[in-house]
Length: 321
Image 1 (cartoon, rainbow, N blue to C red):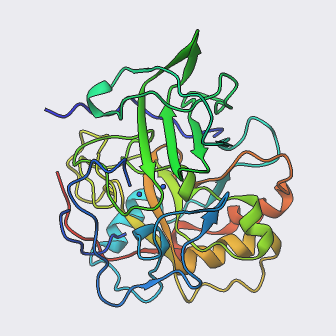
Image 2 (cartoon, helix red, strand yellow):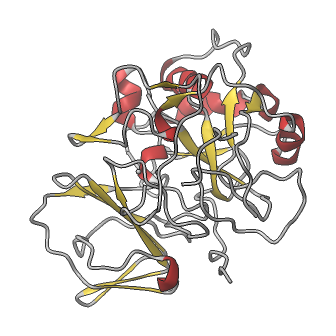
């Protein structure tokens, strides 16, 4: 029987395509890779890149343009459950304790022993974690490390350096050149079994004027279910109106962006094209971003004027309970 993930907390505080049963896909351990539904277009210009690595293939769910996909029949119910009258929130900003930090290492980085509370759903070590790898402030204590030569992403939850290695709640390894999902019912460093780094708002992309992938966000209440590319749930609720993990929303095409400027406008444009996945339990409509002292908080505060009613759910694929 699959153990639910440990309770998760948002930091300071989709509808998914119809795929075969076969995300930053998991260490090659999944039996299959998702096949995009007809009509979806990969990100223009190919995969996003990070430190010279592709962030999944161009046809990966994270990189698909879903702006023209059908709306899910239960979209209104899901949006109402999350909060049609509540507002978007950037769960990152200029203070050092805001957002989720990450780091990259060369292929020569020594790998160290790892131990996990949820070792039956974690990819075993060793991991190339330096002793001073940045740890997310707050309760989740995520560590995200990219091996920029092997293009593998190592992510952990509830992370603590102990002597010669690390002890964590859970850990996952993602091959950024692969579409493989984590095994069914497995968690990752987040409650949905998804990667974290590929869904963060990163300042380099925003300043370049375009984000070419889906984002990651949290909601307070989910149901005991998931849809691909998620592989795990973290709720006991059977309320069908609550979103399953992996549900994908997008900003409605009709929502006027003319009043927005700078970083906020770039983020909202990405939400129209690629949307965002429910990835964890936390604050409603909290979008995850990287820790970066150079964020303009006044600019990001524009997002707080965007209501939940401005979003719709992209048609779901199969729901796994």
